[in-house]
Amino acid sequence: MLDNITIVLINPSHPGNIGAAARAMKTMGLSRLRLVQPADYPCAEATARASGADDILARAEVCANLEEAVADCVLVAGTSARSRTLPWPLLEAREAAGRLAAEADAGGRVALLFGRERTGLTNDELARCHFHVTISSNPYYSSLNLAAAVQILAYELRLAAGAGPVRSSAPEAPEGAPVTQAEMEGFYGHLERVLVATGFFDPQNPKRLLPRLRRLYARARPDRVELNILRGMLKAMEKHLQFRRPPEPGD
Image 1 (spheres, helix red, strand yellow):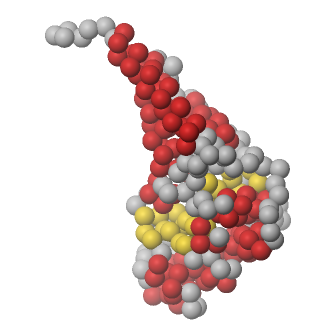
Image 2: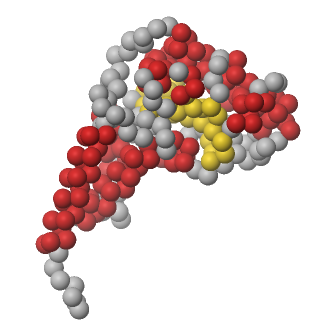
Image 3: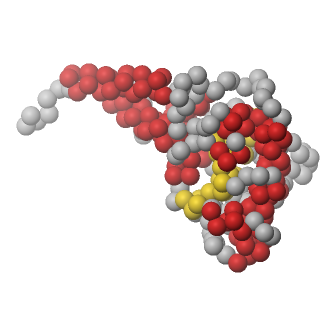
């Protein structure tokens, strides 16, 4: 089950943190590591800090962007140390680990995102997650080293993996075949095109419509049958719009 859990580090600036994160993962039985645009990798310092977790680094995948890193995942969680202007489902580390472990145990591939050492994840990156994860800490000094944060959550994932069925008050996984993030991104792009074509969405005055829609569908977690229904609805709207489109000059 732990093989279905992927740790994703986005733009890590210090190679030592990559090695230390790999060490933290290996001690808890995690093996899948993806790096999004690391500043300095491969690097001897990363290998040295891995302290024997060289195999994790050897198998680590370097990705060009976040979309590539989570394309095959059906559930994505992002770590966040502060509240955001647009509220998102926020779980403590233990409950979040339970949800991720339950999904991974059912055979789905899941991802846990960690952001930059200084600034964490951007709002856009967090908007691509189903829920956010926070680690309870001293409110007067909540700063955590990147590898330390990986260690805490890797520990919670290991506990969840060995604790039998995980019970959570969070929404249940979809009943049908789960949908990957790549499929959801295709849907979001399709939805935006149709909303623009209908005049409902103005790209020049976007406000927060698209992030709110992302939050809605992330909360609902449509399965593949439901996503096909949604895509079919959008295609029918596009066909209707094309049928009603007034002729262009020269048509």
